[in-house]
Amino acid sequence: MNSASKTMPKSLRPDQLVVENLGAELMIYDQARNQAFCLNQTAAFVWQHCDGKSTIKDIATKMAETLEKPVDESIVTFALQNLSKDGLLENSNLTPFVPALMSRRDLIQKIGVRAAIALPLVTALAVATPRAHASSGNTGGPPYHKKGW
Image (spheres, rainbow, N blue to C red):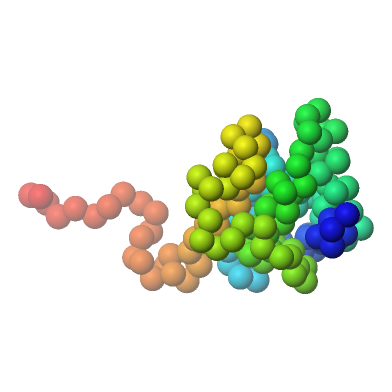
């Protein structure tokens, strides 16, 4: 077992975030940073199992049991790197699984097409602050049009 498999990641405390289940996906809003993240089913599963006690291997095993199909540890590691990069894990120091210059095509070739379908995806969303929204002049009503336009 390599050292990465022994890593026991921990997600940020729920009191720091607003978490909403959206079917198979998970929406996470970090109030402190005013940033939202949408996690697909794979990334959400990994994040929800980052309890600081489970290893990467444990999470992969739980995911395989839930999905009733094999799950490679590299999928979990990839998810953890994305979650860490977006600041959704506590004190994470994961070694990069995907080199910075590796393309999506290279990654798919490395892990296989079937595994690529389940690739974890974390999408950061821009969230306007109430102050920014108010300064835009948009009152939420229909746009103002001058007569004759």
